[in-house]
Image 1 (tube, rainbow, N blue to C red):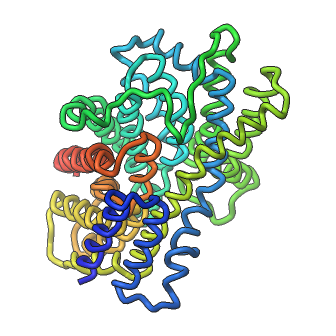
Image 2 (cartoon, rainbow, N blue to C red):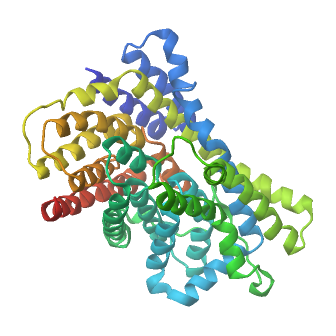
Length: 460
């Protein structure tokens, strides 16, 4: 019955947005309250599930600084002409025919250590500038960018979900990183450049050229000679990544990817600097200097860029919070646990069956709950019961962890914050977001499963 209530709520949400043209954020909050009532949640628990620490507050609390400061950094780089410089340089290096691959490679490198939302915020202004300069729709390059970021998020430590899943399964993080790289590269290529060709055929209206997107702002014309250098522009854009890469390498080399019981002062400092909110704060200060003061701008002009950057992403941040409200109800109501109980089993299974089982559990949880992280971590609790009653080895544990990552990405829809981030950044309708984003995520999931099953057959 709970799944019927969820389906009804999704229909109500789509009706509010597409038919009644109600504001997306308002629609998400209203739907979250309706779903909580339909699921029979105690009235006293509903406000916290929707708006408090379990719902909107949970999402906004961790993402507000990241999104706003990321938008400010992107605006500073764009207003200084840095994005224009990067765009011109990439076009000169790779040519128009290979731009998708250039964006895919750059996004994948950034996505290894940067969480999905941060990567989107920092990359969108640059990719938008490249698209305008090349005369192609933003989505033509954006699909490859998103596929790379999403693949990294699903399969590669030190991303939060893969790291947490590997830890709970006691899977070798080093092996997971090695095989995860292989899976992530393949899925990014299939869901990126290859899928773009298909998407242009069945959803041509989504591939519209524009020189203005509300979430990014209008791109201005610049004299190349007066823009910051390519190296400085890139460094400013990816500055948060530097802290995360240093922390990742240090943890893998010194601690094997595990958090020590008694961390050293060096570990604590590195871990502090790698925190996304801290990294973004330091990076914003750096951007104010490199893209503002160093370019001869006074603080009034710099302040105007900061305000524009904040205004551009504030609407998206609210929509992400609305998605968090819906997710909070799904988790607090216990729906994720109900999904998990459907898969309880104690029978003997082959390695391939265990891997497929792990993917299926995570997939259903993802569709029901929305959050990839919640789906992955919840799936571990179910899969651990299966692993305990079957013969396992270190390689199988790695492939089970990767399969959970693949399942946790499938069929993103209205209860996932990523769905709304993609919709707003690429200025798409709800229908177009389903056609592109939901299909893209499903391609990553299914392609990942196929690759992981092949690896399991060979190595496990």
